[in-house]
Amino acid sequence: MAKGYWVAHVDVDDLETYKKYIAANAVPFAEFGARFLVRGGPHEVREGNVRQRTIVLEFESYEKARACYDSASYQEVKAIRDAASRGDMVIVEGYDG
Image (cartoon, rainbow, N blue to C red; front, side, top):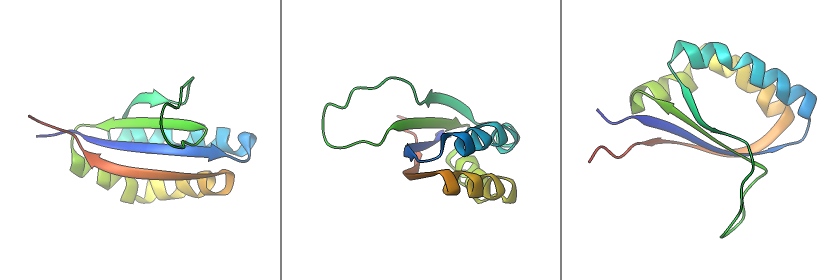
């Protein structure tokens, strides 16, 4: 079974509120077995335009990645993020070749 990933690019407008999101997202991410592969950090844009932060989360399956996003526990936390940032996010199935 292929893994699932969240790939997000985020601009943070209110760092103090975004820090609350970071603290709060640990609960739903633990519930669905998410693991950070990339969580901000230094980056170098080589092509196109990218937001301030890049985040990549890994889940054991595409279905779990989708279920986490749709869960009531994540949607509560997402409201904090929405108040503090703007971004683009996709849920993608990993390559299992």
